[in-house]
Image (cartoon, rainbow, N blue to C red; front, side):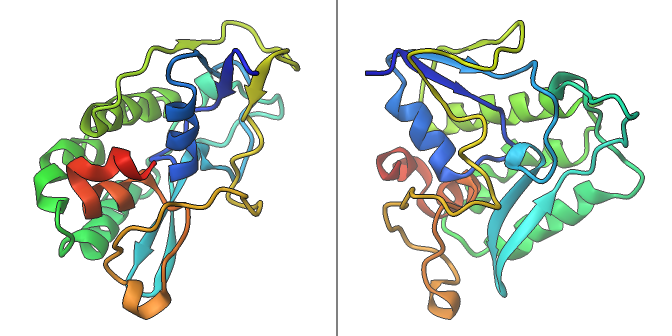
Length: 203
């Protein structure tokens, strides 16, 4: 029996991420803050259901030096207007969903404000999503990097967009389901915009 979970912070994380947190909600939840930033993960990408199918939204990061950067020190790049692209994609994908307009004003500032650090950006989004899900959580951050956490479920590498996940979402209505079928384990926003206050019951 695990004492809790150690898990990274993701950008608009997938349902599997929030399901893990719900599963461990009465145990110890550690957010990894000291790891070296791994590329091509959910830490700076989210997957949504667009009209043509699955779409990756990627937050570009400032190219670091040859020395690996800790995830807490990774800076967001604004060399091109990715925020406008992400917001337009979210609007195009979810404008007709049942709850997009209900939550629109909560998320809009994240696509105009320009925070420096990816971790801070992800944390602010994470806290907003927990609030909207009505999912109270107590969590803390790692202060050093450890390879092993005995008696903890280690989810630092297991929730990954490039790996086939064993997680199966509880089916819910998706706006473009008639075109592509049900898409599993998308960003929490897909669930939130389609199911609104009922979202937590699907995790």
